[in-house]
Image 1 (tube, rainbow, N blue to C red):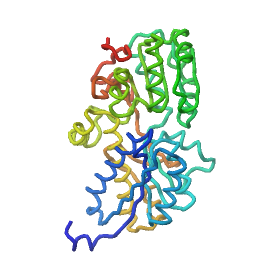
Image 2: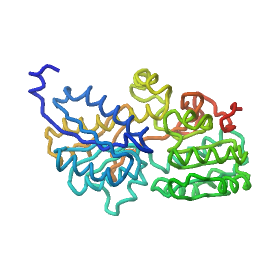
Image 3: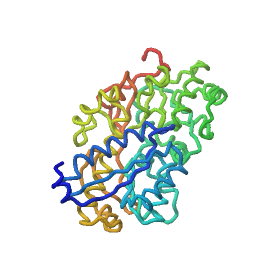
Image 4: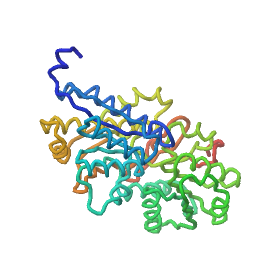
Length: 379
């Protein structure tokens, strides 16, 4: 950018506290790529000279809270981008409410985020899936193959694990499935031999889990060691980690996970993002989806600043509320609860890609579901 052009732009500071290290680093590093791409492409077009300050919260909620506060109070950020997952996004949202500065979030399941406040959010906004729709996808995808319709659940005590676990329990019978075992445990349990033995004894053909990546790997290892090979293994959150089969020593091959992006989904600029990032990530997976969501969150914020004609937080917040348009992640329009629900689809790890096996409406995707054999050749 020419110095004279930069001098005519309104200077604005935007802060982001992201997990670029720690257990959630795959989410944070990908979101940052999306934030930076959007700011690079859109800032000058909107008449802005954006200073993006990114702090690494190391996947620690307390640090995320303090960084959000410092970005606003010390660095002068007029808005925030954040966080990824409820344990980080909720404390960031609390700071935004206290200091009255808007934050646009993503990679944060909506109901878990909303459940953290009795009064609703006034300054925080979330672009992601609604767990009520997302927790249907595991049953709908299971309908595409032959199983005994018996399900074992594994859910941790984090906000999204609690919400999703309850929804799977409540709705399984609506789809003709029976929950025959449900293990609930703290994050970082790391050993699942006893729980896996019970799931195997319950003769569950379908495993659905909501766990962090280290626990997801430990769960797969326990299933291998117990010689338990259900036909379908859904690993939500853990399975959305980039290069998951490699990180699990091959055990993640064939696991499934609900997703917010996949090749063939049909969203705005889909092919462009795939071409730009496929080689960088070694395939098309949730990392690329997080780039798309990060780009979308940043674009929504930049559009709002332009529409507000101001860098005052209250004006920006009001403009975010009026958002209505198509973005690379999909159509963004916030409801009264400050959420913009994006439909979840179902993907499966087949080689280096998370391929689209089911659309949001339950219809088959371009790729067929393969039955899992826990890292062996897929059936």
